[in-house]
Image (cartoon, rainbow, N blue to C red; front, side, top):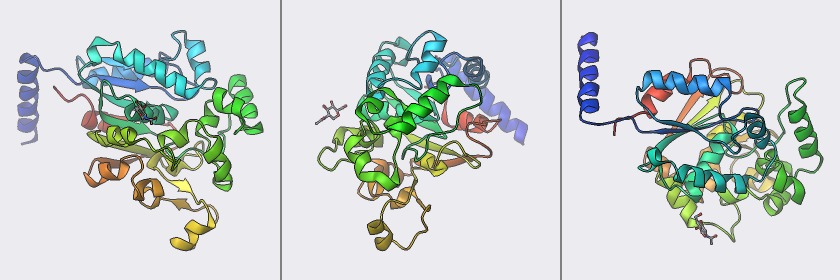
Length: 309
Ligand SMILES: *[C@@H]1O[C@H](CO)[C@@H](O)[C@H](O)[C@H]1NC(C)=O
């Protein structure tokens, strides 16, 4: 029975391919400490090509040179980086009818920002692995001897909300300290914007674009100790203030506000609630530490990317 099904579906794929159908293209955005064509990224793309033969894959870069691209994950102005990536994607002929997106770690919130602000060409399915959609409340520890990371971390911790950090240190631009929310709201230059957190400046286009996704797949690493809190990848954040506590229920000091209780969701600032009510938000987990992807990506890639179009 099973082999008959496999045969039929294989046949169907061949018929569609013969009719000129191709897998929907895919765009990858790597994580912090990585670059667009590191051995890991190249291998990942080639494994996807084994699953979806003929698929076109583009790996987003800020700089073509690998060392500089890696550096641009730590240092730079995220809003400007996004602008350049939007031009990069718009100039690729293979992508012009739209594509699926996979964002690793910070690459996930950056692809979401692309959807909200540009989405031309549009993203169909967006998968984010261990991303920081509600920011981070601590700066991740670096690997020993990773001097680039250590210098960026030191600078970020020193004055995370200073204008210089907010224009030059990537992690500062999605640092969201629940103990210091007012400072975050007034100083942050990126996350407040894509989360439409400023009541005087909510951009309806962001919400409409985000709600236009076909499916949003949010993947959380169960043992993630790099992203604080790890629930940020499911739009969770650490408890915010007393007012919130009294309205909901008493939460201990490091409790998580899940997506469904976030004001951003309840009042639908970014279209997330609309998406969710269409059944278009999927929560997934990968067992293990941050970005220890193992083989956990494979079923997700099979299910959510490479549809013949
Ligand atoms: C809202 O976002 C859209 C898309 O990025 C942009 O074109 C528009 O200028 C923004 N509106 C405001 C008021 O900033």
